[in-house]
Image 1 (cartoon, rainbow, N blue to C red):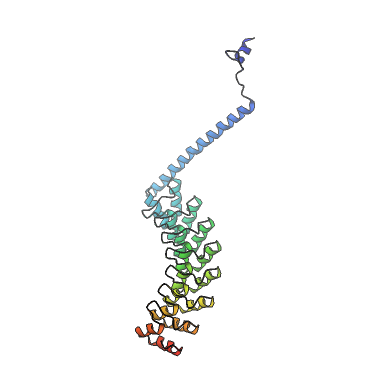
Image 2 (image 1 turned 90 degrees about the vertical axis):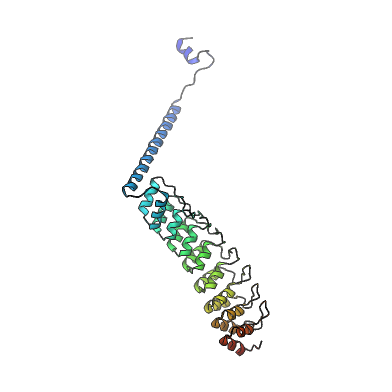
Length: 321
């Protein structure tokens, strides 16, 4: 056996040392190239981060969580980008648990919201009260921001610590456009808060007839009741909203439904002194002899509170008790 053959067979001549094939050498070279590319990119990222921090310093802006949040609130989208390029945690929180996205949604800073979404902000992050950016946008009526969040599949089912959904916030503040957008995306129309109130009850209580109609057209249960038996009609009567009462009755609301204290919409209207609502309910056939938990009729309540106009309406309708 020649020296070369001995060398290739190894010291003990048991088996040849492995040869690296041409393909293996190519694979090793490619891996090395990828590693070098990664290291160069990493070094570039470090340089970009350092440059962004330097740019902030030259603008007399401190690289702090508070400054980042404050610039999001003020709508300084370019500065917000610099903070993120400098390595700022996009999910940093205020003492109340608010993220920059929530703050920007609250302040109606659409450009900042776009930047934060593009950079990967969590659209479903919750503050210490379990509120989200979408709830904030719905509450404040910031329709464009709500649409941006919906486009990122913000969770419509999330509730804050009172059980409020984004839909409830929109309905509570009469932001009908946002309510419709949420419903079109599949928001649960009859979701309930911790007291059993729905979006429809909230809108009815405030007399937001357009929002009431939008909710009903999407299937809201017009006769759903809360834990205390309040429904949309009783809530509208309590709030003194005759037009809303008429809309609910036209859509098959139960005119004689009672709450936990056995108050009907008519009894509630009389108690609160809402003459037009009482008149509407009387004309639509409300039970004039229904009694509350204390056994009092609408006429009894009207007489107790000396509501002369309502007394006249009730007597003209034929009640004597």
